[in-house]
Structures are given as structure tokens and as C-alpha cells.
Length: 246
Image (cartoon, rainbow, N blue to C red; front, side):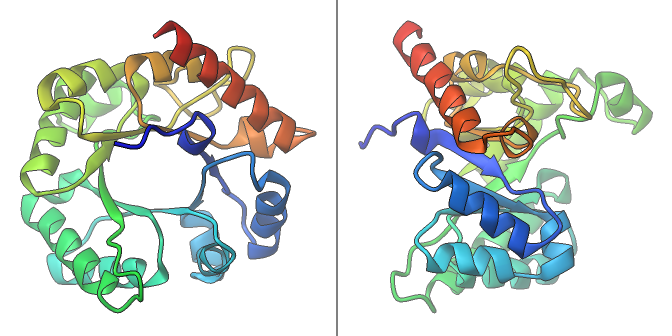
């Protein structure tokens, strides 16, 4: 099995409103990150312009739309995502096992129309990193955040998905329940001196790597920096140090 470098494990979130701004950041960060995340803000503003261009220029893309709808709609959206050539996309695990299976089926169908026929990895969002346990209880969801995340991660694996999006605080529990081969993508990453913004369950890059995250998603600490490439390099360096000590 190929061992990924720290840089390859870094996903930079291009959470900007225009494709032009996203492309400008991607150009600055080329070679400093392994993948770029395109989310709802940009997709709502510009459609698939940014992910399509990034894929065409050889970049890896995580399409972060958190699909959550009836099965036929999710299957069709997943098919379209796969046709774009993205490496990953996600759905909400709370849509249920059948919806997640439909997403996987759509991903398989969409990849067949591409020359490389490579299916994107399909991930399940467990509990948003902005949610506290109090917020979960307000929603009528019983159990601690960790218990809820593990329960949803098990459901995602039963549906055949490749992994989950989960905070660093739940990584150890997911690994214990589902083993080393289940993919964990971790947002809510903040360097020690960075503000948490609207994230509630956060961790430093080093802590997330030591816990066992496969990929880290970092946005504002990089894209909002005076020198985004230098900020990305600093995070990669912290990840590298964590590999040595883990």
C-alpha cells in the first residue's frame, strides 16, 4: 500500500464565492497541498466551474456538497459528481443506509462514462464540527457526540461507503470500532494560535494526525493568511512532526 506524504493528506478548502477567487488560491497553493475542497458557497454561486477546471488542470478535488435528499435525487447528483472527475464527495449519513447506497451506485455509474473509470470515494458526514452535544440534544439526538458519530460511521460502512467526515475528537473511537482501513477525513483543523471561528469540535493538525486522520481539511488558516503557501507549508511541517512522534 502506498504511504501518502503529509502534503498529500492536506486538503485546502476553497470556500470562496467565485471561481476566479478559487482559481487564484489554487494557483498560489499548487504543490503545497494534496487536494482542494469545493463547497456549497462556490457551487451555489458558480456551479461546477471551479471543480471542473481544477480537475482539468490535474488537481484533486473533494466536492463537499453534503448530499441529503430522496434516493433518486442523490443517486443522480452522485452520478454527476463522478462524471466531473472529483476524487471524493460526501453525503449526510442521516439520510440513511438506502440513500447512502444510492449515492454509491450513482458514483459507480458516473465513473463509467470517464476514460479512467475511477470511482470517486464516497464519504458520509457524521456530525458537523460546528455542533456541540447541547445542539445534538436540541435536535433530539441521544448519546454523546462520540457515540452518535460511531453509530453513523457504522451505518456508512454497512452501506458500502469508503469512509466518513468526522472531527478529530472521534477518530480514536471510529478506528476502534471500524479498523484502520476506513477512511477518516477531518475538518475543524486549526493551528494552535488560530481562532476557532464557527467550529466547536476542533484540533491542531498534529493532534489530528496522531489520532489517525487520513486527510485534514483546512480553510481559513491557509486561505485567509497573508501568504497562503507559507501557511500551508507550516501546517504540513506540523503534520510531518506528528508522523515522527506518533
